Structures are given as structure tokens and as C-alpha cells.
Image (cartoon, rainbow, N blue to C red):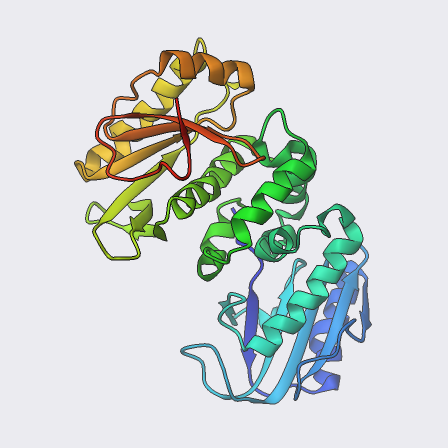
Length: 348
């Protein structure tokens, strides 16, 4: 699976003629390309071009003789930065890739403005949700995942049943607005993936991690995602109280709705999914992890059956819950959960 959009950095001097010969002409020969001035002013000290291809893909390139704040591990001096969801010209094939947070801030800010303007022109429904737009920009504009990730939010309400697009987006805007996950944007946004087709199972599972983040922070915990443990696995979160009174590891799983599974019903779906997680990752870790079972993909009727029976999930401690875009989270627990979640959930 391809990666979210990243910059390529080409060390060395560039001139307008070189950009025309090594970037514009190869793109035009292969795809048909219009080279133009960027929509927004280039970063101070940089020259820049925007390329729009006949197939709808695009690219940006800016260059300078004085890259005095290069990414970690790169050498200061002349350099060019390429960003695009199109084919990469051969002159840039052997260049190193960097995320938005690694390149000089003026370059990242300029490219973000260019991409955002194009995205909102194509998907105006995103405009009321600036944090969602910014956070997922590297996948919304990725080479292989642009159509599928946009469709996931636009046509599938980010995996929430019994909800419309705007309800789901407003909820995710509230999740992202505090900035808690901003330092982890590259890895968290990338969890949506950049496949050409909509994968509701994988994408909904990714959204479950955002819901878990909101649940934990609403309960007063400070969170760190993607915690590497000695088994070689990564667990989804470490949750700590601001007073430093201990930490809890959390792993999240999101069962599929019963209608999408071979399981006989929603209760079996909860048990089967939790057992898969327990028999693999959590068994290898040998304890010390709280399992979050996110049933937010379940329609209301399926969740009512789970809530009435409150099935065990073959792992303790565990919290089983369903979040709604309006912000309500109903939950039950199994075992002695080492987290105080009273401020974040309604226990049933």
C-alpha cells in the first residue's frame, strides 16, 4: 500500500531552465502537463512552480540556493522540494522523502495552502471542518488514496451507521480540534491507508483509534500513541494522568457489524473480534493491557443486543462501548479496569 503524501528533497542547485528541462518536459511528455505560477506566494527565498496534469494529478516544486533549515540529517545549502500525487520525474527518483513536519516550516505551510485550496475546490463539503481537512490532507491528496479516503468521509460518514456525513465530520472535528494528536499526524492519518478502493473495515478501525483518543482525553488522561513493547508489537496508546500517577497501556479493536460477518449476530461479532486480538497481540504481551472494544460500527439495534447481554470478551480488563457522533458513549466493563472513565462514558 502506498504512503501518504510526502516531500522529496533534492540537494543541489536548481534553475528555472533546469526545472523546465528535468521536471516540466518529462511530465508533459508522459501525462500532458501545464506548468504555472503557484496559487500562493512561494516561501521567502524560494522560487516555485505548480504542475497540473491532464489526468487530474498535480505536483509542486520549490527551490532555493539557501536551505538553511534542512530536515534532520540533511545538509544546508541549495535544494529543491517536490510534492505531488503524480509520477515522479526521473531526476528526483533517488531523493530522500520527508513528512510535512520534517521539511522547513515555510515550505510545509506553502504546500499546505496550495493543496488545501485545491482540495476544497474539489470537495467543498470539507470547508466547515478545517482540522479534519488539515489532519488528513496527506491522505486526501495522496497518489492512490485520494478518491477512496474522500469517499470514506463523504459517502460513508467515516464508518458511523445511523449518522450522516456532517454529524460524523463534526464529531471528528471535535476530536482533532484540541491538537492532542497533532504531533502524531503522520502516523495517525496514515492509518486510513492509501488504497485505491474504499476498505470500510480498515478505515473504520482507524477511526476507532481517534474515538479512543477522545475517550481517554475526555477522561483526563494524557496519551501517547503507538507504544512499542518488548514483544515487538506496538500497542495503540499509553494513557497517563497529568499528575504522573501511573500509566496504562490500551489496545483498540473494532468489530464489524454482524451483517458484514459470518458471525451469527452482534454478540458473536464482539466475542470473535476480541478473541482474535486476545489470541494474537495481547497474548504475546502477556498481560498489563486494557482492551477497548469499539462497537461504533454497529447499528442501534445490534448495540442494544450487546448492551443487554454484555458478553465477556475473553480478555480482562476490557471496556466495550459504542460512540455516537453527537458525543455520547455507552459502555460496560469486564474485570478491574485501571482507568477512571466516568467523565467520558455512560456506564450501562
